[in-house]
Every structure is written in structure tokens, then in C-alpha cells.
Image 1 (cartoon, rainbow, N blue to C red):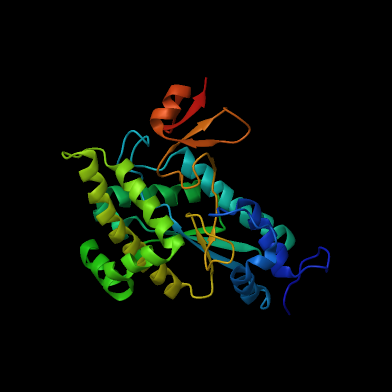
Image 2: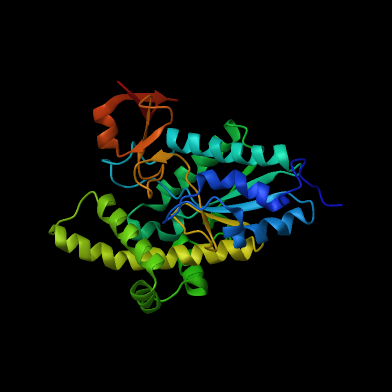
Amino acid sequence: MPHTLTQSPSTTVEARILELLLPYHRTTGPAVPDPAAHAEQLRRIRHFTDRGAPVVLTLPGFPCKSPNPEKVLGHLPDEGERLSLAFLDGLCARIAETYEPGARIVICSDGHIFGDVIGVPDDHIDAYGDELRAMVERGGHTRLSTFDLRHVHGDLPYDTKRELVTRAYAPTTEELRAQVRTDEETARLYRGITRFLVEDTAEFDGTRSQLQRHCRQRAYEVIARSRAWGALVAAHHPDAVRLSIHPQPAGAPKFGIRLLEADDAWATPWHTTVLLGAGPAPRLLRRADAERLGRLVHKDGRPSHYLAA
């Protein structure tokens, strides 16, 4: 018999679960706090609650650290990832307080799928993923699990795996160009990815305009690979509630989620570093900016975050 929530019967089970996610909605427009405006998420949550099963959510992200040392402290996870994992596990715990079967989140690390395009070597991505899993275990985050390209296509080389996944699921560059011209959400994503690529490029021998042209071309490849990864994740978890670290409008198939506070709606822990003590909540900032505002703190012998002066 399906489990039900113990709160007021005036709203549905799935709506009350979604209400726990809505304060963290990372959106491209005004926040829409009404669960009814998020029909796709309600439908997917209902798939689990109708059976009294734990709600499964998938989150592509946590790929690797930016290769630009002006933005991050190194190539391994740090305080930003620690805080984000604790937030996600805590979110699942809050769902369990109102819906007994609870929820779990599968973190679908997408670094390998486009690492060659963004200039991050596979061994750095492996090390990032290994430390991320160790953080999950050390933190006792039993509601979280991880999934990456190492779980797909056996022991084949990463280049071969990337080719197989891309060939199976990725849109063509021509299709993406057409979408950028006609769909504002795709255009916004394209501009955001292009900006990230420009900022993440630590060394480039050409002019600024040449770098921007180069990154605009690479942005199509990053988006194509990301779409392919999302489709592969959907194939492995067809019923899951689909989360995204990118801003998403209300009513979109994916629910954009904010992990930590940041002035930039596109900021993530893997493109920034954490500044603590500058307000009630941790802030995500470029390393160069955090360095001006605080002192560096080490954890486990590695740079971790900054503490406001």
C-alpha cells in the first residue's frame, strides 16, 4: 500500500515533496513557487509515491575542477563539494521526514564525456571522481550515490567510450546551431557555456577575439556531449526526477537546482572556490576574488576554502 505524507491532506504527496525543492530552484526567470507550474516534476515524483517507493533523482554534474587556477584551488574536490554533498543528502533527509520512504540522489559525474574538449585530462577526472566518492563515504551520505563513464562500456578506453556515447545520443552541430537560432533557452545555455570556456582557458596564444571564436565552436561540442550524457543517464534511470545544475525555467523537463549561494546564477563549486564568514551562507567566488577577501584554509593537507578576514 503506498505511503502517504502526514501533513495536511489539502495538497498532494508529490506537491509537498516538490515544495521542499522549490526554495532551491535555479531558474532562468522569476521563481515560480507553485508546484502546479512544475507538471513534469510532479508526474515523475508521483511515479514513486504511487508505489510507496523512495523518490530517485538524477543530477548530472560534479564533472571535474576548472582547469583555470584563477578560479579554483586545484583539481580535487574541496569545501564547495563537501558542502554541496551535505546539502543534497540533507535535502533527501528532509523529504524522508515527510514521506517515509524518502529519496536518494544519483550524482552522474559528466567530466569524462567532455574532458577532452575542455582541456582536463582523464586522470584528473578520475582523481576528482574518486575523492568525490570518498567524501560521500566520509560524510555518511547514505542517500547519495555516484555514476560516471567508468560504469559504461566496460574497460574500453575513454576516447572509445566518448565516441560510442556521442554517436548513440548526441545531436549534430547543425541541429544545435538551428536550436540556438530559434530557442532562447538553448541560446542562453550556449552563451553560458561559451563564457565558461573563455574563463576556463588558462593559456591561449591568440587574441581575445580568436579565443572567443574558438570557444564558441567548442561550446557546441560541449553541449552535444552534455546532451548525450543526459540521454544516457535517462536510459539508465528512465523514471527518475531529472535535476540540473544549469538554470531551468518553470515547466522544463529538468529542474535546475542551486547547490550553494552565488552572485552568478551559473556558478558551481567546480568553477569557483568557497568563501566562509562573509555572511550567513557560504559564497561561491572565483579564487582570485576570494583571495582578496579572506585567508586560505587547509583541510586534510590540501587547500580547502577561504575564511573572510
